[in-house]
Every structure is written in structure tokens, then in C-alpha cells.
Length: 333
Image (tube, rainbow, N blue to C red; front, top):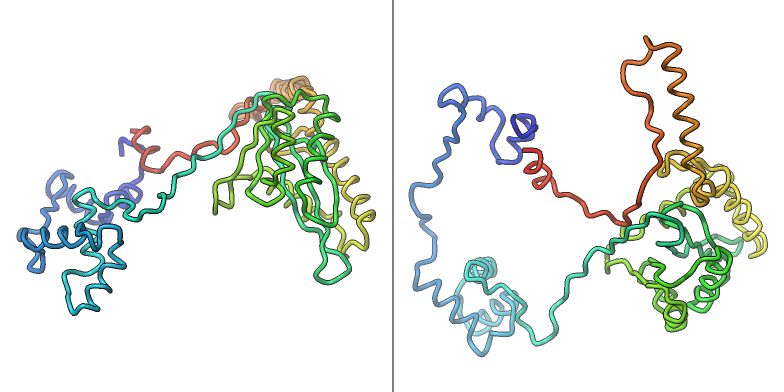
């Protein structure tokens, strides 16, 4: 296909079997031979019936109700005008399928998207549970992450979730990194500690810009979630629950040291977060490129393509907007 799609992919897009498209190619040169229905459906509403549906839906009695409420109310009076799906279909065709109640309609939340081209521009944070030896009792690990470098810039273990603990930690993070908090974006989910008054007041006083995940969207904070998965699935994670907060803090401190200074992160071209945070990844990756180029010159017959890409990762887009499949297909065409 000129658009780059396979026959199977194109058939799925247009809703026609691949064998049918092959038959059309043989008979009519590939033209779409669908003709559609030749007659109007026998059960279709007449113009007067459609008008009656609209009059009922827009009457003073039902103007602020949805079809799910209109149909039962009519049935209680011994009337049947149309089914719920018909009400919805007619209202949609007339452009009237909108919010019909007096309450404020739900406002769409834009995807929280931020771009970082250096350290201390966009941070992400979250809280995860740590099991203890007491059944039903947990410790809470607060972790702040720099999105551009993936470096853990601050952490703390507490026995409770609190916006006051979070406020204290964000101040310590800014001081430890020597970062100017003015304009720094701090992203989190919509938990109580994230939206607590003490935390928000602290961010406002520091000049930090708060950013929050969309309601009921589980993957709007991917960097913190990925960090927690690395933490809990690393081979060094204890097989037994933590007995005390001090024991948990000791283990987390060692994990953060390893993660920042030894862990080769796949998202930043397999350099450590500390190297990336200090902008030393450019020279480190240049050395790798030189090694590969020398190996290729030594045995060129073993290299059929370009050497591995060791170019530094540029700007990081937090929650990059996803390209829909149809849009990507149109762009390819």
C-alpha cells in the first residue's frame, strides 16, 4: 500500500476482509464495490416521530434530564415514545447531546505535558508503601525524582502520609541540589499529601509550579511509578518486611546510592543518573562512540549497518502526547 500499511492493516481500518479486497482487485481494479443499503430500514423513525422525540426531550419536564431518566418516567405514565438508544441517536444527530443538568458539566483535563532540557526543571514525586513485620501496618517512602536525569533528588521514610512531611522534604531537596525553585515544575498524582494546604503553600512560597495527574488516569506519573517498580523488584529488595523505620531508611539509602551512581539507566542511553545530572553523559557517550568506530574500522566486514547509537538523549517530554493510529497513518500517506 502507498500509505505503508499492509493489506491486513488496511482491511482492519476500512472494516473489510482482506479476501474481499483481493477479490475487488481482480474484478474491478481494486475499487470499493460496497453499495450500502438500497432501501431505508423498515423500522426507521418517520420525520414526525423524530420531531416528537425532540419535543419530549426538550419539554420543560424533561429538558434537564438524560434519556436514561426520560424513558423510565414515560413508562411510569404508561407512555412509550422511543428507546433510550433512539433518544440518544436523535439528540446526537441534532447536536443536542450535551450536558442537560443544572450542575456544572465535567471539564476535560488536558494531559500534563512538560519539557525538560536540563536538571532541576521538572521533578516528579510519589509515595509508596513498605511492608512491616506488623500485619496491616505500613511505612511510607517519599521519593522525589528529576525527570531529565532520572536522579533521585530526595527521599524520606515516615510512618504516616502527611503533606507536612512532603513540604519539609521538598525544601530539603531544593537546598541539597542548590536549585532555584522558581519555575521548577513538580508533578504528582492527586493524593491527599500532594494537594494538602501545607504542601501547596510551601510550593507557592518557593515559587514551584505544581502539576497533577488527571483524575482517574493511572499513567500520568510514569517516571515515579517506574522508579518504584525498580525499587521493589531489584534483587536486593529484602525478602522479609522491615521491622522499623530506621531499618527501612538504611536500605533505601543504599538503594538510592546504587540507583544514582551505579545503575545504567536505559532511558538515558545507559549512563547513571548522577552522570547525566552532572551533564557528564556527553563525554561518556562520546568515548563509547569512539570505541565502536575503532572496532568497525578494525573489522569492517562484521558491520553491515551503522554502529550503535550512543548520542546523548536530548530534551525529555513529560507525558508526550500520543499519536493516534489513524493520524499516524494519514501522516505516513
